[in-house]
Length: 68
Image (cartoon, rainbow, N blue to C red; front, side, top):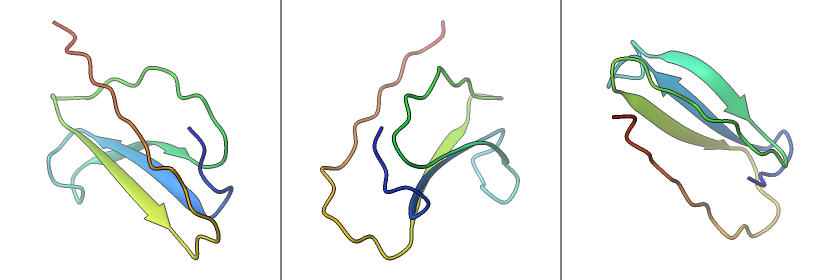
């Protein structure tokens, strides 16, 4: 994943379908290769937070594997 360092963030929340009740388990910024992330109670929220991005980005892709 390649996000503008300290400007764009990918947050991973789990434990509830409601972010107010979910737990933040990861927050990524910059160039990172995330490890496998597992949800609690079958809920996961991905939130992209940006502040004054100065360059065009190519977007992102997301993969999902059912653990069953």
